[in-house]
Length: 406
Ligand code: ADP
Ligand code: ASP
Ligand code: MG
Image 1 (cartoon, rainbow, N blue to C red):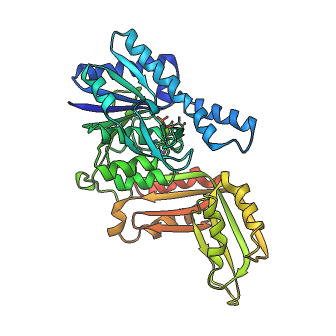
Image 2: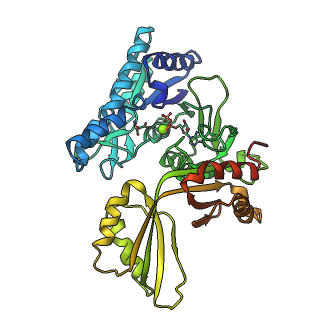
Image 3: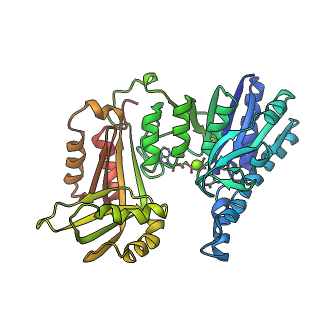
């Protein structure tokens, strides 16, 4: 069986008109003799509206019930797509996560898919049906509905491709592919024809919303080729594939950024072993992800300053945990909510000296102050004032000539 997985994002199924367009795309693959498995997100904005409702009941709304509510958005979108396909004369039906089932493990709201039962879908494909499967959800060992992290329909689609041995997974979205940076912020952003799993994973983890990071990790592990393209254009999109399939002369392939970070600095903490661990342990125990960390060299060898960044949404909780942490002493806690992280990404960096210098020089020329730096083999991230975000991305886009040679 020549199986293909098509995933449609929130904007692609955002209105009835758009769902009609989606149905046309699906049937075009059926006409090419593919057995099509569709995975859909909720209509755009729906998941956010549902989340608001839970918050109106309680700021501490139970996570298990939150998943039951958030998963309903996908149910609506899938039923509408199936309804439209039937109207066009095709055999189609919606499949909710529990009906396959899609089995997940882990915490509510951030579950991981560990298995997808194939039998029912394979039998349905064999009789010419088009299954429309809800993304973003599954069931756990207690038969309760679970959801993946936000944006998780990408991962549902990649794992459908894995479990059903699909030839390919096509991600249909609202832009023409993966760009050198967010095309909705930077007009000169350019579509990339092919990108490696490694670079895409970094771009996604560092803030490019186009693909959920976990989905790229799964695709890389299972060698699933992904095409990312627009629901609203015939233009060829971006292929996410193995490094060896890529021939690019560009050292830097993309720039990602975040807008929702907070920077915390603890002034005057004791400079002795175990202090950093006692600061970060309660954060870890409360599932708060610490991102960039810098500890200054202490001038007097007794006290130092420790700076780190977290997601803005975790700020209230983090502040409380630090202020109530009896095992650490510090003189002052400084919080800055006006920060953004800008990252340049490219596997070519490993073999090209001077990339860091070029990045810092380009920012310095425009008088943009760098507050924190972190690097890996294939990326450099800097923390800057949020007001300089657009300017910084533009300058770096020019400096690394990202509009050429893709
Ligand atoms: P979907 O609803 O289809 O899942 P998302 O909103 O999750 O779509 O992701 C698509 C959005 O990702 C685009 O509208 C774009 O603003 C944003 N984006 C961020 N970085 C990039 C990038 N490097 N290339 C393309 N899009 C990007
Ligand atoms: N509807 C979910 C969300 O908004 C999943 C997704 O769109 O991928 O996060
Ligand atoms: Mg998405």
